[in-house]
Every structure is written in structure tokens, then in C-alpha cells.
Length: 144
Image 1: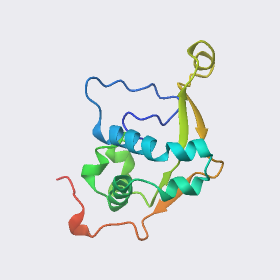
Image 2: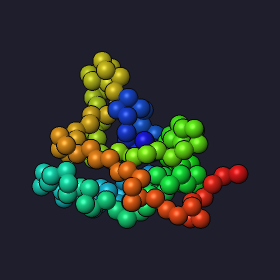
Image 3: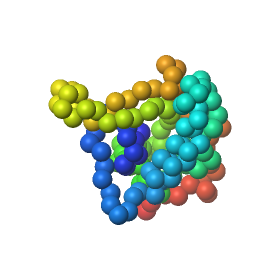
Image 4: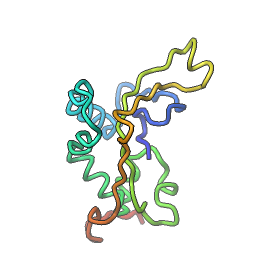
């Protein structure tokens, strides 16, 4: 599950949006970078990152797991892929990594990758399931 413009798939070309940015992507970049940068410099364990996920991202995960169409439209994955068969995903994986540009003259030319990705830890991937992470039906927005 990728955002529209944040680095994700190392093979995906960087998104250039000017003078405006996708607000969710911008908020995520700013809040995660600002609140978790210290963890990176301290080489904190992966669990520390998951304990400090910003509230708005926690709400995003809950809404996606609940099948909210408005929130699905903010993501970089088409709604039909995110909600296969009209059903929300049973779980969402969250991973933390440091992204830097590849060297165009060397790495990008050979591999086609735009990004070097360094996970914060070898066990940083976590899955968040629907159990305990869904909203009541009346709070879930559905498109007509």
C-alpha cells in the first residue's frame, strides 16, 4: 500500500508536485520525519517506531481496514485494487525505512531503481489486522 507521492516502491519514479502537494503525503512526511528522526539517529528498535505512529496515521489505517472510500481515494493504489471484491483488506502492513536517491550514473542506470531503501531494523514490518481496528458501519463513508 503506497502513498501517491511518498517514496515506496524503489522502482517508482519520484513524484513531482509543484507548487502544491498531496496533503496526506506531506503531513506523513513531515510528522514521521519530525517525530521519528531521533529514533533513526539512535538506531532504536523497530518497536519504538510502531509505538510512535502519529494519531492521524493510526486513524488512516483504521478507516482503510473499515472500508472507507474517502480515505481509499487518498492512497496511491486504485480503490479497486485496495478493496478487491468490494471488501477492505484484512490487514495492512506498515514498515519504516530510510530512503535516499540512487546514483543515476551507477545504480539507477543498472538496476532501474530510483531509491536506496534501508529498513530501520531487520524486523520492522508489522501487520495491523481488522481485529480491534475497525469503525462502526455508520462512521464509514461509502461512495455511491
